[in-house]
Image (cartoon, rainbow, N blue to C red; front, side, top):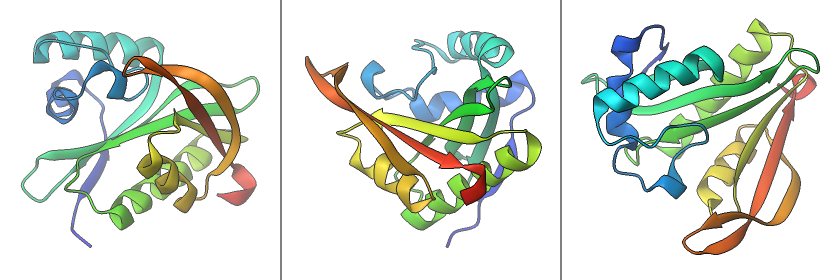
Length: 168
């Protein structure tokens, strides 16, 4: 396994590194809640708003050269029922085992830091690599919403996976 730095993003000056990770992705492939932006500055401004009001925790994964090769984050944190959603974005440079390890670390962090009952992950049925990665990290398929997500001019099924504190 490669050596990576996995650390929480705490200030706006750390956000430009995330822009390089997602700038090339089409809108339909962006992780949930990530803004469409046409410049690094626009991305930074929009992400700051999201960090204030929607995204709860975000961790950056950097390789030995300091290049951002992934991120894992939480959003829709609801204290009243102990539920929270997570998502991630990894560069193809990150191996499956490393990505799985970081998802498991992030899940453990969330359950240790917050009074959560359950974490959720959502993805298109077409995103088989993300779904299998989540299942390998201890998430299980909760349900499939038929023709829920519009992608590439067609409606595709949407999967919701969950992980309970008792299985963390």
